[in-house]
Length: 287
Ligand SMILES: [Zn+2]
Image (tube, rainbow, N blue to C red):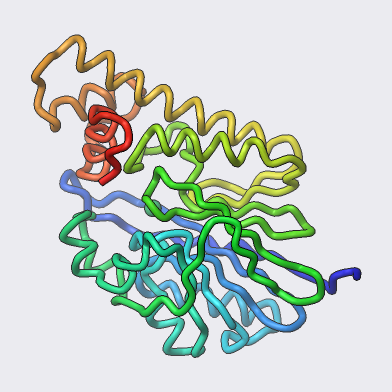
């Protein structure tokens, strides 16, 4: 069967994180997968992003109410922040990996366990997860088209990537670290393994990452190679700094590592320290 038409619209959502050293401008991508029958939304951006997302939908001549499902690649505020508002406006269902459920449904717990600066301003509130996703689950989109769930932990325990078939478009959430960006993941070894797993999928034509521009053709695999190398570089810098400064405290270690990997130390935040301490901990200890 030949699938009907599908259009993928990346939606770039700028936002501000109030870091300890001052506000940091960031952005994140959400993605609209528009088929003839409905609209699937991958991630929602921070609180308030529904206006940007709905605006994009209207520009394409469709209606926000056509969103039938949101798939959250994971629970972090810049991915689930507007989920509550979008569900209230559209009545859509929400799907995510089982290991992210607790933090999506209890955002106060998430804030306590992962205190992102400015958390409460970035997240519109908790939402119920209607459908739990697991590795290799298939979400049918009709007309022979589907999304395959690929569990890619490391950035967070239940991070998932989504492969749209037959277009072979991969939506990787935050699973592929972007070189030169602040390193933010819970488990570097798992993160590297997840990138490796994605690299081993043959025939991916498009890559849509939450923090990076869209990639096409051979650039897809180059971006994955670079992401893998970045995780290795950060872990190597942590090891070197630990060896040179035994007993150093986490804050100082963060600043030294940031300098070593070519990032401005003033951009350091608790998320980066969390990442760096994860590189210090023995592997397998993800939270
Ligand atoms: Zn994230």
